[in-house]
Image (cartoon, rainbow, N blue to C red; front, side, top):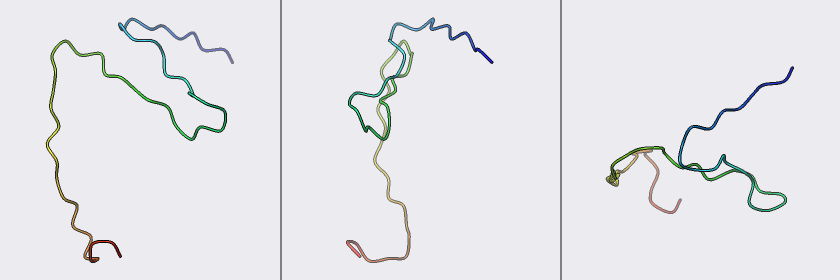
Amino acid sequence: MQVKIVNKSAYPLPEYATEGSAGMDLQANIETANTLQPYVILTGRPYGA
């Protein structure tokens, strides 16, 4: 099966940066900047454990 990929964003499609890379960098195709606020995930484990 072949799937046609259409990129209508201002950014290139994600790709692996180096051989052996585990993931790709994604970019959001948005008009305005958004700032993500830090948050804490409570796991019940002490910090650094």
